[in-house]
Length: 511
Image (cartoon, rainbow, N blue to C red):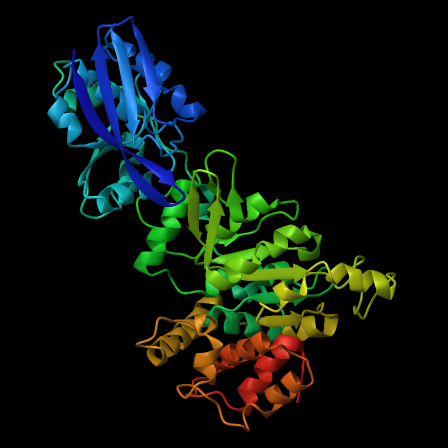
């Protein structure tokens, strides 16, 4: 009778914990017992492992097998423990080298014929193994490219349990099998829409560039056909490429969501646009068993676009208030707490009323005033107070269409260069501080000696605060937008013009 152990990784959100998989063979009645808080999918691993081992030519022992997943108090989810369980059992039976198995972290799901299936969350799992001191990981052949994105880790790709057993010293002849590949992700090959497709709406295009330069949130109100969705879809194309840390985080989130990562890390900011029927769990994440990321977490370092925002449930919209401030989503369960990144730019679009025609020059609105007020009141005041840029978008008239067709249009590439220069100026100014974007800078710092503006520059802003037109939070957000406008304009400090423009973008106010 023997004992062997190896290691696997249990994911709780994006954080991975090392799990020791122990297998013990005793002389009692035949059977397999799996202990250590497995969920339903993991409890079924015993049947998958038994069938896979038999069909791979290395059947499990007929004696009693006890498999322990330690630490026993940590909940384990999913089928990614299959490979570790199988090799621990074979190591206990001395079919493979127990010492070799103990030195490697094993991650992968087994098919009944012994082949290994690609496993979601491979990238964060390998990152966790590396951070916990392990430098050798065995994964399914379909996950090799994704696992190899982690530097400093030796990745061993195997197509079947038989190949894994041979690598660990089993005296078996290799049998070629068809590798199970991860499904491709069509969204990874999508071309970003270009800003040049938009005709007219120069104010909205400038507002998008300001939002991209400072990482500000945007709320657009306008009738159907005004181009709100087109504008929002082009905001990710104005953002700079992701830095290495953000790229690794976005790629890990993509892997955890079950999407293909590919041979390289994701370098472009993501865009998430959930339907207005989404629940709070779909928006911020959750689940009764394994906690999964929601749309807000998947949009981290990118854009979360909520079209027809008033149609979302109020509880779903208000669930975004805390992530907008903290940049982190924390989901608490009785036995675990998961943390997901949530540093996204929120873009909301709404019609001005239920019929959508209020304020349109060509059609009459049929909604009573009380109906219009109730419609936009579905978006709570505290949420709107967190939105830096709030603008109205109008339909393009025939005359504007003729003029715009003749005028040169700005492309996303040119606008992105302006945004990159503006962000570089902000990063240089904020060097030595914990912040790199204007939207991250707290109000006390902006109003402090480091960045305080003159009384003449903030006169209109002070009057708006005295009249109750904006809150103190809104005051600070106007200052942040003013600094972003200054960075785009290439000036060192915001003046009267930049503060006035920022105030107009905040509340439609003028001096």
